[in-house]
Image (cartoon, rainbow, N blue to C red; front, side):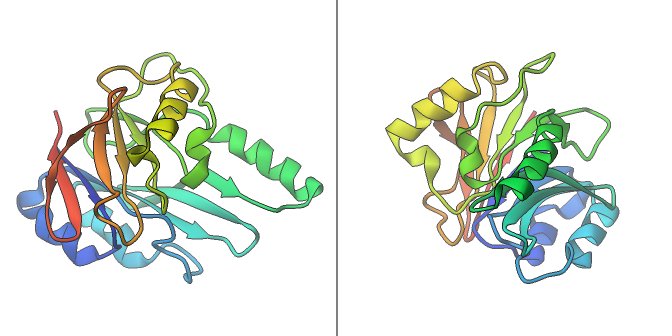
Length: 204
């Protein structure tokens, strides 16, 4: 199975990399679907036609962004990021946020792959403990969190209950392939082959 992160949101990249119907997970950068009223059909169709799951984000226009998991033609909200909301609105969003704490199965096949999905600066929030450690920590982001020693420690400390030494962190940085990466926690060793606008890693 391939793990793919990209600094842009090209659907053509996905089609080219997943020739032969090889299963994969694609994590797109923060804001990849901004300006749309809903997740674009071509991405949903890609998850029906190919064995691929896709994680991407969209601004709602109501003061918060949502990360979505696309899998088998379905669209599921899985993470939320908000700033500057009034207290009344914020309390409702916080209740919604609590529902997204559970690890999600992101695998497009029958072999489950559990992932915590965080949106932008929510990577610094602790995740609720699960019954088992997660395989992936997926962070659609415009910020190169993982390149700085200080933020690395915060990430590991705040997710210690959920990650192990085998957990990979997937972070595509908007318009910056250098800041993007597939990292092994907790030491942040880099994995994956860098191509033109994306990084791909064979995962088993």
